[in-house]
Amino acid sequence: MKLALLALGILLLTGCFALPVEDAVPLPPTVQVPELRTMRTLEVVRGDVVLSMQPSTTYLPVRQEDLFFSVAGRRIRGIYVSVGDEVQAGDLLAELDRPYLFDHLEDARRDEEWVGLHLAQLIERHEFALRQAAENEIPVDDSWYLQERTRLNGELNIIRRRIAHLQAEIEEMQIRAPFDGTVSGAMEFAGVMWSQIGQTIVTISDRGQYVFRLVSIDAGLFEVGQIHNKTIMGRIFEAEVIDPDAEGIERPMQLGAPMPEAYFRIIGDEMPDISGTNFGNVLFVHDRAEDVIFLPSHLINDIDGRLFVHVLEDDIVVMRDVEIGLVGNLSTEITDGLEEGDMVVIL
Image (cartoon, rainbow, N blue to C red; front, top):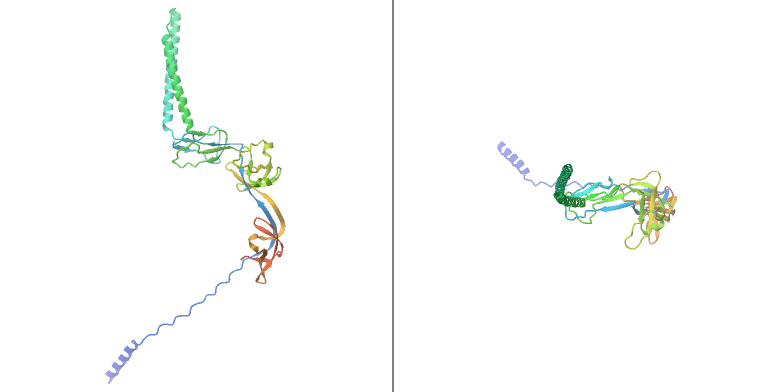
């Protein structure tokens, strides 16, 4: 009886593992509430509205010269200066590769020295012969001397012409500064470069004056005697509009149809560093509104001639019509519709 009950218990336990298992119920999805976007606003304040332009001007040196090689197809040995370098007349700026020329020149100079030595010895021998003949009262036949002197002088002339030719050839392969000045342009040496006739290698400028030139339709806005701010290499200087003819400044030629010109001279106690400068900007103010209510121009909406902005009132964004005055380069004067302290919404 006990054995039967034990077998029945084992059978019941084994059958429990055979029953079907229900799938796990998934958890409900988590819903994340998006963060509220912070509204960007701009407080209305007073300030200046400026309408201006800054045309680019070109530096006008007293003298400027573009330098290039007169020999084509030769390897460039080196370019020895950079923009802004100060140079003296005769300084070597660049040169072509010419390994054999100096050897030939040295050989020719040795030949010149040798023939010159022979000629000097010939003259000494001739003078000695003349003294001996005078002491002994013996006539001298110096035809040999005249013949040899003529030969040596002819040989010496040929050698010297050869030296001059070699020196001229060397000079053609070198670029030297024609006057004291500043390097205002220089080709960057790339290691392996070949010469081309007419290709500017170095530009030298005599920067003895602080004059800039504007060639533009806008040049007609400037009048002689006016003082304007001029930006050079990020620094601001005062510049006076001058008459180049009255100042004795040579006007560069214009290509094509002539355009209005204006000339500016830097004034004041401090002069700019123009060693590497070829350009600068001059400020011309067309109009200015001072101590007015204004907004950045991009915040003003214009739909079919209706001008409005979005203003925050009691935490509600509303549209408010505005009237404008001077439209400047970056901002616009608001003559009606806004007051100081209003919060304009940046959409």
